[in-house]
Image (cartoon, rainbow, N blue to C red; front, side, top):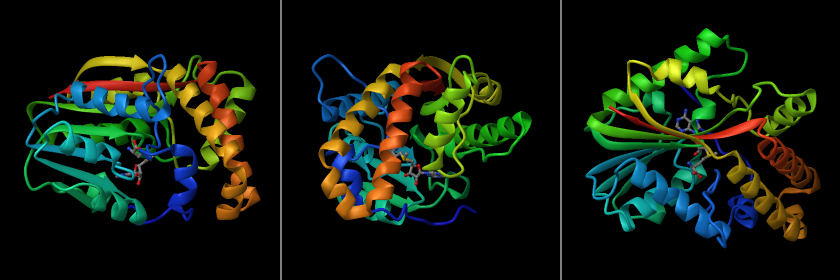
Length: 274
Ligand SMILES: C[S@@+](CC[C@H](N)C(=O)[O-])C[C@H]1O[C@@H](n2cnc3c(N)ncnc32)[C@H](O)[C@@H]1O
C-alpha cells in the first residue's frame, strides 16, 4: 500500500510557478495562450476525449490540487467526480474546491469504487505506477494491472485518458539526455517514464487504444513558462523553501526544457476505450 505523504513543500511555493490552476502537468498550447488558458485547454481536451461531458461518474487518478475535478463538475456537467491522490494537502485543497467531488487519499491499487465510471482520467500519475529497478517484463506487468483495474471500473464503451511523460526517441538518447532525465527524476522519487511500446503491450487485449499523440513541444513550452515564473518570483521562493530547493527546481525545469525540446522525453496523450 503506498504511503500517505505530502511533498513537504508548501502549496504557496507551487502556486508561484504552476499558476492559478495549480496543474502540475503539461499544458495544451494554442497561439496567444497564457499558461492558465493552456491548462484549461488541456483539461477540456481530456474531458472531450473521455466523452466526460454530462457523465454521471468520472474518476481522476492522481487529481493533484483538483483543477480537473472542479472543471468537470462546474463546466462539463459531470454529476459526481472522484479524485485520488496520495498527498494530504492536495486532498484537502481539492476537496474544498468543488461541490459534487469526492477526494480520496488513496492509491489506485487500493481504490474500490461504489459503482462503475463513465470515464477515467489519469494525468501525471502513470509515471508512478512501475517502480525503478524493474525489468521490462515487470514494468509491463504493473501497467497491465493498472489497465485491468481501469477496465473493471469502466462501463462498456467508457473511456480512459492517459497523459504521461515517456521515453523519447531514441529511448535512451545521448548521455547528456540520460543525465538530464535522471536529474529531472530526482525531484520525483520512484517515478519511471514508460516506453510507448510497453504501454501498448500492457494494454493490448484489455482496452482499445483509439488515439495517441506526442506533445513533447508542449511540455518544453510549459516548463519554460514555469521556469520564467519561478525565476521572476525567486526571492519569494527562497523565503518559502530555501535557496537549495529553489535551485533544484530551476535545474529540473532547465533540464526538462532541453529533454522535451529535443524529443529525448515524450509527453504522451492516449485515449483508450473499453
Ligand atoms: C504530477 S501530479 C499531477 C496532478 C494532476 N493530475 C494535475 O494535472 O495537475 C501527480 C499526482 O498523482 C498522484 N499519485 C501518484 N501516485 C499515485 C497512485 N499510486 N495512486 C493515485 N494517485 C497517485 C499524486 O499524489 C499527485 O496527485
